[in-house]
Image (tube, rainbow, N blue to C red):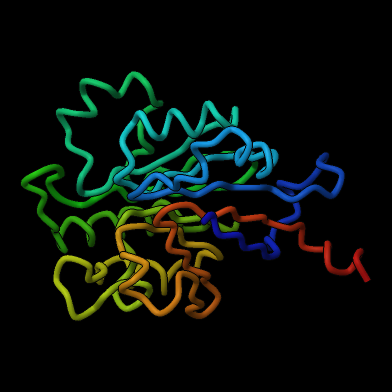
Amino acid sequence: MTRHVSFQWPDPAPFRGRGGAPIRLLVVSDVLDPTLVDKRNREAVGTIDLIVGCGDLDCHDLSFIADGFNAPLVYVHGNHDADERWASYGKFCPQAIQSTAVQKHAGLSIAGLSWPGARGKSATRSERLAWNQSLRLAVRRLGRNGPLIVISHMPPFGAGDVPDGNYHRGFRGYRWLMDRLAPPLWLHGHTPLAGTTDWQIQVGSTTLINATGAVIIELLAPDSMDKAR
């Protein structure tokens, strides 16, 4: 079942010209949510402004979802996204967001952190590469104060991960990055929903959402609550 969540976005700029409408993201990861396969279910979801992939959904599934909702797509690679498979079938999707790059989508600044290590059957995790990613993104954001959405496959250490298991333990570099940049929203996959107590957690000013399967996120304009009163 597709989960839903909404909260206020701190920057009014992306909402200009939208007539008060929220920005709606469909965030997917790891497994194809079966409710998205049926056209009637997709129609019930309504308009989506951006599809966000947090890894380990192959290009066929990502392109199917993007086409089904007629929405742009941004994504990062996960540990199971084998290079050779994406080289053969990547034409179905746009290029993944380069690690530590920051792109604008739907008026939002989005930074991507693809899996730091080898991908595919011989996937390896690299704390060193995760630290390299984190340091590079932190440098990119020097002097920039606008709110940021970070998308990654693996969550930060101790924040939505399974710390006592090596395979699902988050990266310490990502945790340092989260504490330093304090992005309002961090989206990730990888962690099985059965292995966590909650798919949405708050760490300081950052909301972390485990998108395994699918989550619809509605971002509301900063003054939306005042207008509702």
